[in-house]
Image 1: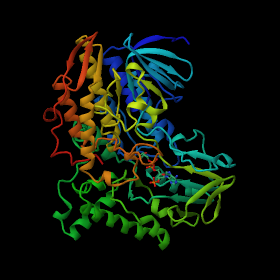
Image 2: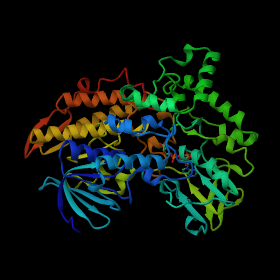
Image 3: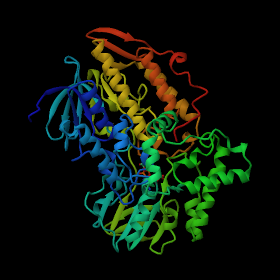
Image 4: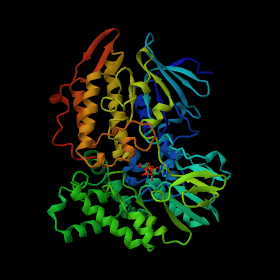
Length: 563
Ligand code: NA7
């Protein structure tokens, strides 16, 4: 209770990639009195919670890191092509030590309420452990996939075995040795987890509702040469990740699928398959916008599944995919399809054999009872907005964020919501976020927010708040950008909120590309924060409403989605 009603310049919620950099930026570059509140007992954000078997980042390590400091970039050496949670946490600890960040972070401190107090022009934050404090600026750094989605399957409370959600994995070792394990879910997480669980489980039943495409990750230790390349080419790598639509360290091809004949195409796909990773979707520029073009990649990937999986029925169930490749988040894997050739692994095709309930010792389908010792829910997240809704956030006049976002998140640039002054949302809905490699998105948002606060302080501005009409225009544009792609054609995608019962079906991330988005945000700054209301005391200093031509002139460039 030491901090009862203590006031800070800025409070940041979350100590993952975004919270840590935002802290450094506000405290060390702007000199603001800044506090970070973190629910976990240590830093790491996503990587604090996601410790499930096989967990690994799908972005390549040399781009899944901060680039704001050349010194930090060069001092750290990644060991593998794709880093796992332990290495990422070590990296974040290294950064935190170097910048002395821990002293401004309160761990085990989960924010329950954040209310804007109009008279004081401050946010009042209340935490689950009884802390109440205030700040002028409130910045959410809560991640996009941090609210676990545990499906409402009847009977879970009767299950006498152990069960886990991958996104809230215990910190102590979970042994699958000789156990009968049921894994529900075959998204990016399930596809990573199954091969590792199968290594020791007595039997693994993978419950699949929707089959998924996957490309081999081809993870490997980084060679000495590659490490040298990374150290020697900091500027070049940084320019690359900041200039691509998806924030990854590779360019999307400028060729279109039907510029090549079938043999040439198959060679391109084969090479990409061998190379592995998310680069597969960069093989042609129209893969994510043209269904016919996409079909060629989809057919190639389906044929790969059939060539790997020996049991015909299983291969059929794994490859009967009725949506475009990369229409949902495209997973990458290490021996996922090969795992189904193991004696101790079987696929339960939930489309044909539906789950009726969980019993005290297993899962009852419409055809049989499957006895289980452990259930693993790899069932994803209430993505992007879920974590916001776990908190009671109220803006002007006590208006609740849940009410403003009831029909879908309403933001301007994913950075602010009208009616919520001085609340900034790093990688918030309406920004590229999950369609991109996260660290470059985070850095762009952190730097934009810091620049905005610097501007406010230099100009004696007390509040910055998204203009209602700017937010309306932006939401329209977010939809427009998504509709130019195949992403909106997949009805069961979590980008659309379709995985959570009762969630509005609205495409949440910005699909116009990170490079495009960065330019738009820079343009807003150049135009003196057009679309944001900047107020000093009661005087409006700047309330420029964007006009479409001025701000969102993107029509011929939005067909470059991040994913
Ligand atoms: P995802 O991609 O949302 O995958 C969740 C999986 O769980 C998916 O296969 C779902 O099937 C399945 N699911 C969800 N509810 C059920 C029920 N009730 N019954 C059967 N199957 C179910 O989450 P991930 O954790 O894999 O990945 C999230 C992100 O984390 C990922 O994109 C990376 O950015 C990292 P569905 O497809 O909905 O039919």
